Length: 238
Image 1 (tube, rainbow, N blue to C red):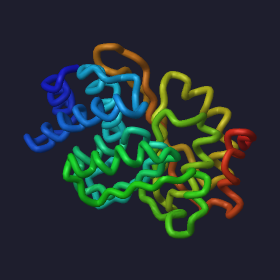
Image 2: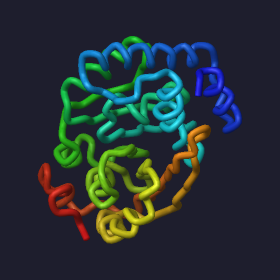
Image 3: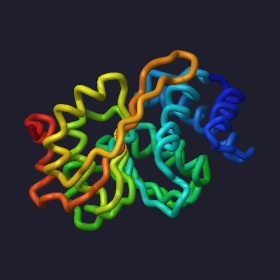
């Protein structure tokens, strides 16, 4: 997917990019490739692959959930900024908080925000388990997102504590989502969530399967969650 095809595909979904936004995606690609020579951010660096597998894929969350309001989103384990930075470019009204456990990636994100001239973005070097215990952030976000970070049972424990009541947790997954979701049902319920819908689609051109899972936050998360760093992955809630 080249930049022109990217713009046209988004138009088909009702997302119109102006010249500034188109240029921001171009700068994003350039900055990503430059930094990837210094630190390992992604295995995908070819222009057409980045536009399809990173930019378009990240924005696909907006095909199934409204991002047009005055919303504060938290991106857990965003790595090189996916999915929240492409969404921020498309919807400048968003307030974005990213938490990632690797300081080098936070350094990249800070520089990227400068290059893209982004406002209302914050980056935190922390483990998601610790971040979710912080009273400043716990249950404060309208939308909490994660893309390809961990299994759903683990991801729910990392993300739902950050999501405010009546907010939404969006998990962006591949083809394995159905089995993962079955295993995570008990965790989602325990943590205050309720599955709203599962949306499956294929990426244009390559036709690989994607899933966008929307989970509504119905009740407050019990104070004991998330457990200490490493425990969700070592001993998932079942």
